[in-house]
Image 1: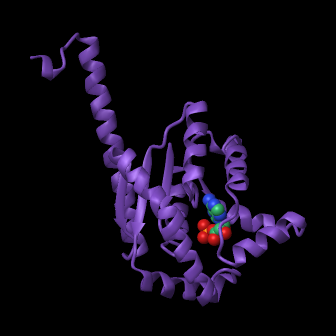
Image 2: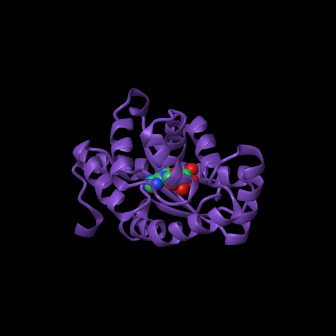
Length: 215
Ligand code: AMP
């Protein structure tokens, strides 16, 4: 099962992804977390990355595509994974789609969190007090939001149009537990619909029942 979460910085994607990951027993892949782990290595690459991330800019598509293509090969991704922070640009979308086709995989669920800008700013300022992230300052939040609207919003619009049957817009302003319940209900409902329609199809095929349009 592959689940993709979209939403502006501070929308609560990471928090939700962690809860869903526990409930569904699939791994949470946050490209932000993966990059922040790289920063601890203190080499040439990590210094370059730190500068980009702390300025609220996006890291190159080449680096992100490589990170994801290597990471999803690992054993803990075999049952599926939740993507939080990727794909974030249209070139990443094209790369990721090709990768999935090559690996004979499909995205199962897409969730986009809608949330107003003021709530985002308040949440990030609160997070800054506890997580000590270099990119959670007032000025950098504005650059990150701008990047989100310029680069990532077209990505979620693409998925909304091209993958509409698995795309769900959810209200990211609501309380964490409520949103978590809503997401898990949507997962269950879509899974049930898929299971139900494929089992009817199997039954019809086995019993040589013609599709209704032929009656
Ligand atoms: P996040 O924790 O998802 O807010 O990501 C923190 C920072 O990591 C972003 O502001 C970017 O600098 C970088 N980053 C994370 N994911 C990506 C991505 N898919 N493409 C480019 N940069 C990324």
